[in-house]
Amino acid sequence: MHFAYIDAGSGSFLLQMILGGTAAAAVALKMWWRRVLEILHIRKPEDEAPAEPISAAHESEALDPAREPAGKR
Image 1 (cartoon, rainbow, N blue to C red):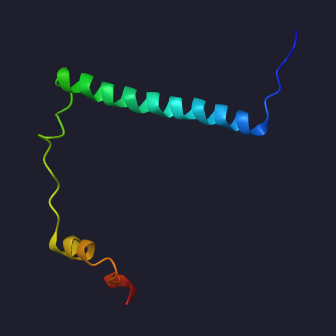
Image 2 (image 1 turned 120 degrees about the horizontal axis):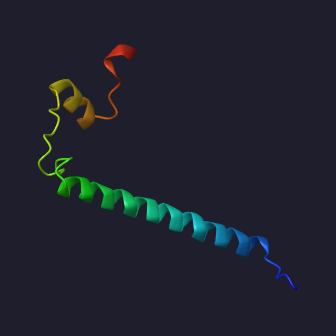
């Protein structure tokens, strides 16, 4: 029986392919599962979900990221 030599570059490329494929499969399953839950009416579609209101204080902080928080003055 002969074993082939796998150098470090090929081994890391193979590892990246395996990990990337696993991550892609996990995301695809997550998206598929959400659709299944929406079809079964267990979860509301994201288009119909109510958005959280933004308070005036949080909105002004979001518009000016360079401004220091009020507690650090």
